[in-house]
Amino acid sequence: MKDYDVASNIATKSSSTSKFLGEDDDRSGSTFVREILSALEGHDAVTKYLWAKQNMEKSIWAKLIKGTEPPTRCYVDYEKHLDRLCSTIRKLYDNDDAIAKAEVKFVTCRQGNSESLARYVKRLESIVTELHFMGIRTYEYILKRRLYDGLNSDYLREKVDKELSDPKVSYEKFVSYLSNFERRRLGREQRQKLYDEIVNSRLRSNDKTAKPATSKVHTL
Image (cartoon, rainbow, N blue to C red; front, side, top):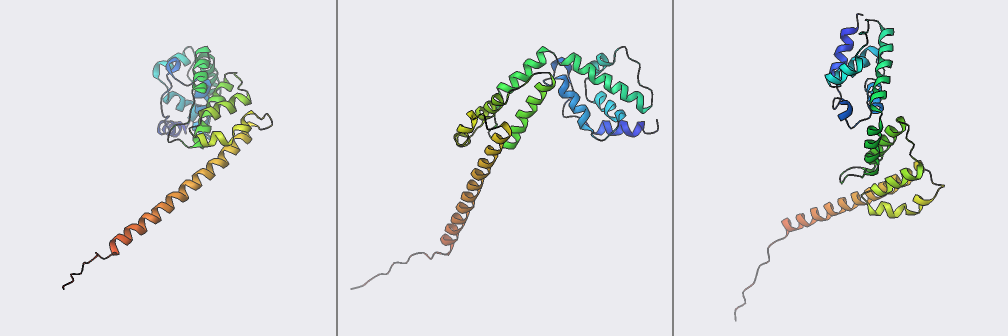
């Protein structure tokens, strides 16, 4: 295959943030499979297969491909091997331990002190997606409740307190309410910050231009 070296080069340069460690990894098998398939979106099976090899511990890779013939240098064969690899990863690492880890991540998920609402929502939803791929369903109210409890803003919780228990308010609508209130809050904070900067700037300017007071001596 003439493009093999190109694919290998792309896979090497497009490294993951951390190598997959199998049983010792916080990610489930399904989560890592999603990384394999999405990290090089638009590329062929050859590149994705080589990326997977590049981004997991050697002992884990050896365990996954044990007993299989290495793929021949043709696209169709790599597609078969990639499918087999992904199936094996899910089979070995979508176990009770992986489910338990994901469930703990869900119930302890909280917004960081400097984390934006959007990033917090995305992080929570990624955990729910991970559970979904392992066959665990998260009910909408539970998801709303976890999002609500994990907020670091009392202001936001007060604003959506009624919507939390309203079954007519979907999770998507709940997030929309939160996002709107958050934009207003940030807007007020930014306007107040700008106002304070203007006032302080004027005070400093007045201090520089003010003339020192002089005292007059009166003689009798």
